[in-house]
Length: 437
Image (cartoon, rainbow, N blue to C red; front, side, top):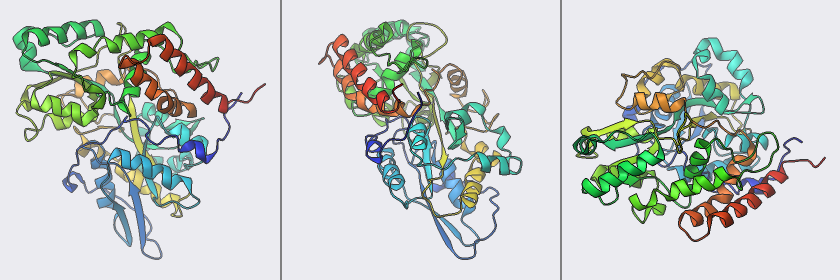
């Protein structure tokens, strides 16, 4: 059995490709660092359109590339946009014979989907050509692997975001609490803060029913050592005991969270921490930089950080490793060699140094334990995430099963019934990629 191409209509199922990266706060052009960006001047003026969502973690790379490479007759153009808007525009620009954008910011979950349908240009030849000039051998092998599909590289990684736990140090110190290492400890800590800390809903997780909730379920399932789909048999795993436990463990946290939690994306979770209505949160590490800015919260100096807990103990944490990077659409009319020079310039050593601590850059050694208050938590979490599932069906299963996850967590559908629905959905999706016999 081997994957085969699917129709462009199926690609539109990815109307919202999870809030893995999420819409973030916009940082000003001051995040732009001037770095070397050499290229042969084109024969005539050239506009290059860049599609990238705005967040404190992504902006340093986007702004640096736009500022440094807009020269010698070339103008790079980037318009502010949120993650949902980027998702829609990515699908649109990759669907036609000619695209609107020449460089697209992407991430690991969706690379297999777009690569398997020929929407992205492989980058291996360009990496080999420019490896020495741009020091590309210093990019994280794990992040390169996360943006690869079927043995080929389709994205040049900029940075990674693991889940990170943030908590109010003043509240924990007052109650004699330590950061939780398992879900059982998380429940105990949250119950104590709820009872004795004066915070009615002490725990905040991004469980937006139209997006983040699927990431949360996948993180819980992964912490229990289970993939969406068995790698050997190709059979979905949603009727397994681990799939049931992932539901029950997540549901066990609901008494400690705001009843409206399924309407909260990551910005809403940040807001709960900003205003003190929550004392513990778990979200992508790209959100941590905003928390420590004094302009955002009177508690900015009280926030402390730790790796996320595991669901049931062990080294695999309740975690989701999102790796972002630059891709070149297969339908761009701009010279890919020229575009790759821009990408490579944005992930150079100068860019990486300037992106810390807002981002965890792909360049090895950029982040040290002393580089930010949340760096130690990031470094530990990076090595304890569930392994990626680099298959074209993964993102489709996430999107298609997301309403079922929301119904089960809300108690509208029994766990066992929800498991079977997800199994049926995933089985049908995987079947589209498999040749019988």
